[in-house]
Amino acid sequence: MPADNDAKTTSSNTDEITFRKPESQDGSRVHKLISECKPLDENSVYCNLLQCTHFADTSVAAEMDGDLVGFISGYIPPKQQNALFVWQVAVHEKARGKGLAKRMLAELLKREESADVQFIETTITPDNEASWGMFRSFAYERSMPTEEFILFDSRIHFAGEHNDEYLLRIGPFNRDEA
Image (tube, rainbow, N blue to C red; front, side):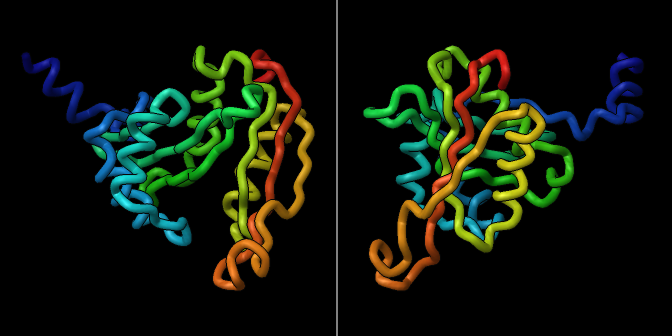
């Protein structure tokens, strides 16, 4: 017994991060995490519950010391079965600087549910430098091509109430490259 106590107090593994599929009880935790990760758009708790249940196979929760410190919500579009659309990436302040977002993305691509995925797609506003940097770095490190274009125009789709949303497309690639 003393050896276990010593291991817990002297271990430097307090930063160990585990990945798993989200579950329904994570919905409110995801909502709280996203609210703490400005400038991410907050959705309703109900939306987060759906992400954690209906889209659990293409989403990932990251925990450190029992706290939810990262979350990616994604889905495979019904008419584009070879793409993983990444809806939102959230990394809590205390888990930043560890490459967590890229590690979560790689985790999603390893799953059996992603076996047919050849593209990663996401939308990003022009001013979200952290997201641009993370996705471009992920693609660059794996020598994956990228392309980008405006998908949702501020004036046309948001009545001027939201910035343009650019679609960033990474790929094609095969699962072994990811």
